[in-house]
Image (spheres, rainbow, N blue to C red):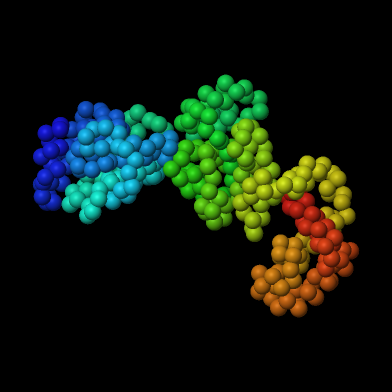
Amino acid sequence: MEALAARLSHLDPDVEGAIRVVMFYDTLMRRRVDLPALARATAALAECVAGIRLHSAGRVIRMAPDGREAALSSVPASTTTVITLDDEEIGTVWLEREGTPGALDDAVLDRLAIAAATVVERYGPARTTMADPALVELVISAAGDDAARSRALRLLGFPVDAPIRVVVVRSKVPLEKIGSLICPGRPVKAAPLTGAGVILATTVDATRFPEDVRAGVGAAECPHRSWQDAKTALRFTTARQPVIHYDDLGALALLARVPEEDARANADVVAISGLAEEPEDLRTLEAYCATGSVRQAADSLHLHHSSVARRLTQLGKSLGVDLTGPAGLTRARLALTVWRLLGE
């Protein structure tokens, strides 16, 4: 194999060279090599550092042409190709070459990506972000003990002692796509549970959620507590704030614990319920409560500020609240929030 690599590394960039690259990786696959062996053989062939990264396990393999693990280097990846399996991106492969990429680099990486996908399918880890719902439920269940939870996390492909955040989502976007977007390059698993989708992730990039996704994000602590907090955060989401971290709620999270009977009987909440029959009035109040400014509310509604001011005056009379003062604005905000938590 080393002799073949040496010969191929000096080929001209022609069809014959590409064919021999294919033969090179076919030989490796017949030998049923693992990922480190793939990276090692590729580095010898390309005469530069070759790398493989798997998103699900957060695993990175870098091999030097001499067959040893590559030392840290400032040389960037000159050529990169994604690894796909069952139409899902599961990782990347690359070459770290100074100067111009080699004539056969693209062909080498194409075959390396295919070979890496084959190895993952054959030996694991799990190739998709989707997971067995029973395992996910065991991780977030309050009834499970620590040993069972740890075993379930290992079966799901999470490293030992990795911080786990639970994300609860409502969306028509496939769960596996959301998981891959918000936790790129790190372990992440998703499963549909009753009423919502659940994502277990080691990190969460809230800026990468697709549009039309409502999501509550729990803290990276006990998965069961994170699950409860994520469900609470989801209840606070709105069209203006579709993604909410539980930690950002602060004292507002206490509203979720108000007994439903008491919440429905509150005069301010009753008034908001009546206002909800007039969508235009409700949108005006929501915009004002979100911004705290008549002019900013008017801008968001694409109306003149004087028109919004007149509406708010009438709304204040209907609600029995002076919306121009801090106390009245706070009451309106709390009433709107509790009304939403009731699912109205």
